[in-house]
Amino acid sequence: MKQVITFHSYKGGTGKTTLAANLAALLAKKGNNVCIVDIDVYAPSLHAYFGDFVQNKIKNTINDYIVGACGVDDLLVQVTPLTQFSDKSSLSGKIIGCFSSPKREDILKIEGVKEDKNRMNMLKRFINFREELIEKNDIDYVIMDSSPGIRFWAINALALSDIVFLTLKMGDMDIGGTKMIANEILAQFKEQGNTKYYLLLNRIAGYCVPNMQIGETHTSHSQENSTFLTPVADDFIKKLTADTGIDVMTSIPCYCDIQFAQKEFLTVLGYPDHPFSQQIHNLNSLIEN
Image 1: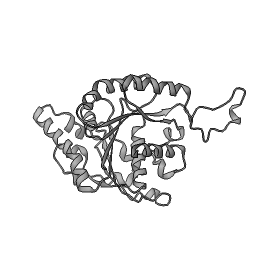
Image 2: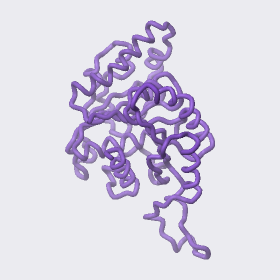
Image 3: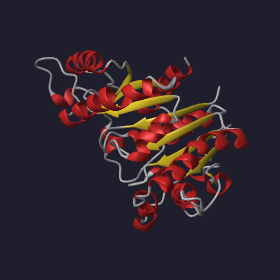
Image 4: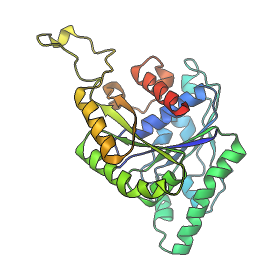
């Protein structure tokens, strides 16, 4: 079954792009044909996970397509083979990419349009994007990384999706914003289609929290394989589900070695035994079920 999976969040910094890129890589590793789509038209960064070679191949962007300057085929960038991982992790499937432009003038092309007719034409092209992409390119999964918040293109990306992951951390702003999206925005979509919505808690306190007994010294305890969640997180999950009416698909602990890495990285390929890679495997299993 063809599926469009979108990672969305109320605000930036929730790790949705890292999750989207790694899930796409894992799906391709397992033999699926995947298209990654960067619909964060305000601050695109998905391309950074696939190296300079891929970035240099981008000739047309989502911005060009929406305004009618190119077709879907003109957007597609062959991401695989990923040469930086060829000696560690081969992919039996393929990844193609559709990327957004970070240039101010290209953002204004699709954001600065005020006329209703032109805006509607742009929206129609965006709606057709999904079907044309899947039908012509033998795609099993489309993974979309949306822009945060309730901006026009982000909300329309949700409407094109089969599964939406509302990604958030445990901060008050994340919680309040996610509740607002769930209660005011997604309520409209639930009546119009069959999209499934889930909460995905990321960077939850756990991996980076010392799991020490009273009297145990910090240096005597190894945190290397700690992947537990704190009782505070468990209580938080129950309350958030009750407040939003949306189930939590999974909760991923904070991994500081990933969060504070100098460069964006596909952990599932470079470090397949890392606890974060196992979390992506778990997420994939939940999607398949």
